[in-house]
Image 1 (cartoon, rainbow, N blue to C red):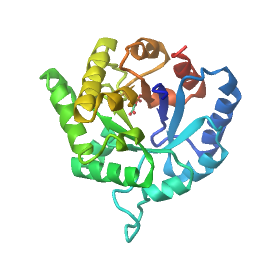
Image 2 (image 1 turned 30 degrees about the vertical axis):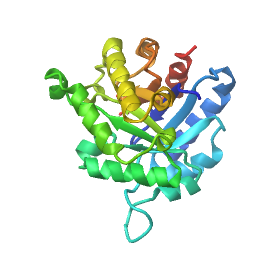
Image 3 (image 1 turned 90 degrees about the vertical axis):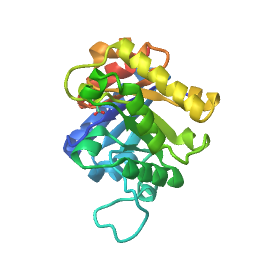
Amino acid sequence: MMRNIVAGNWKSNKSINEARNWMGEMGEAMDNLPKNVRIMVAVPAPYLAALANEKHPRIHIASQQVSANGHGAFTGEFTADMLVSCGVDYALVGHSERRSDFGETEALVSAKLKQCIESGLGVVLCCGEHLNERDSERQEEVIESQLESALHGMTADDMKNVIVAYEPIWAIGTGRTATADQAAEMHTFIRRWISEKFDRYTAENTSVLYGGSCKPSNAKELFASKDVDGGLIGGASLNSDDFQSLICSFT
Ligand code: PGA
């Protein structure tokens, strides 16, 4: 089981042509990239099917969004089943921008995760504390409650399709990265929580990624911690050279 993952999150960026150029550059560089890393990128929804069809086989395509419902009268929504049928491998669930800017509640996050698991779509479950929560040393309590709520009713078997991304909100898009020690501490806490909630085998086989201003200059240090299995990367995933350097941080 390969725990190392470098996952990009383009958010609402790139035209389809720019997206195709990025994919082309990645394809050309692939032979020189380390083999012990799973490569993933979460692209804007309109490009999912096309890119899933054209991508290099080593690149996993993720959706940044997924419906909390199945098929039916839900205008504008797309289901986990639809994503699977388009060759999409994962969906981001619980990203802090969705939680704070689009009002996604814990109940919605959990419903989305459930839809993905039932459809066999992989999940990147994002969690993270606000700055005031970190300042008052409540980060573990916050993460525990987010995980507990999102993963309620899931089994160890379901966890085979779940990747956890720890993304302190104060570090996302701010240029302010958690220190390697802060990340290591939280990742160890998350892995221990998974072990207690499910079992040790599940904890040892679940990838826990760090997110928040992760870039080529700090990735090596962050990824060096035994419980940090890679990153979910926003800004630094837009340029394919930077993204390749992030992947090479594992060598
Ligand atoms: P950032 O975003 O790397 O631009 O901080 C990370 C994320 O939102 O996943």
